[in-house]
Image 1 (cartoon, rainbow, N blue to C red):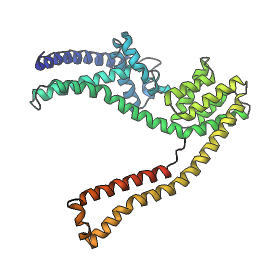
Image 2: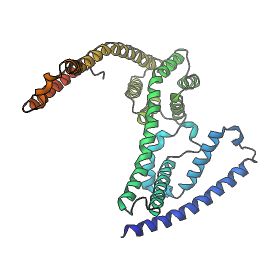
Image 3: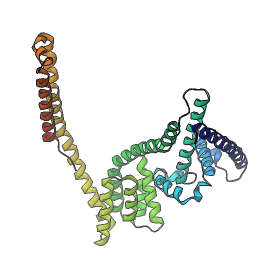
Length: 329
């Protein structure tokens, strides 16, 4: 099919979609206007940013009503559950993220058609394919970046959460009370995960499986150790205070060793940096005072000698790096 015909068909489809979108926006405005006069309305209690965020996600939720009928789309959307915070369960769903990707693809195709109409670039099927690929995979990279930042913060606060839960259990609190107490005093991204673990216990899920679900969301090795310790503790019929005391001692020793390891390896890293810079400093020093010493290296067989020196020193640097590098598994 002619690419220009494809562009026309896409333009018509996008135009119809925009009309449908405008109708949904008007419908959403009416719903929000009516909700202001309802007795249970909480819209006035929310901040402006939160209200806008909720409105946008509610709009997207209406857009995905048709998409949710397809099992393939539901399956593709299931991986986005880890991005949703507990406080966002009321207005965010997994399939919302797929709808956003669809809207981005449509937006990029619109820009593509506009650019063609203004002769910014010729009709090309490749640009359509690129628009679709960027619109589909681009948001995934952005969301994963934001999620990884959140995981890094969770990793830093994980030791604190274990210490708080262990301390609460030692004061004869139940595991639910300990989780509730930890989530109330620890501020940060791990607070949301502690609340999810608490909810899992409310639904009858064991603590080991709740932490296992936590691990599947974040993929942190320390969380894997926790749920494995809980599984072994359940098999051995150990109490939660004993299990969490052992987990806390493990983390305490681990972080002390990591701190000591970091201080020791910093010295080796500085030595490696000096070794790496020596040839460059030597070259600059000699070239500044006696540059003719290097003339023969740039003519005839001198080039091969120069390449040999570079290769030999690269191998030397690589070997030194391996010798100095210690993996902290």
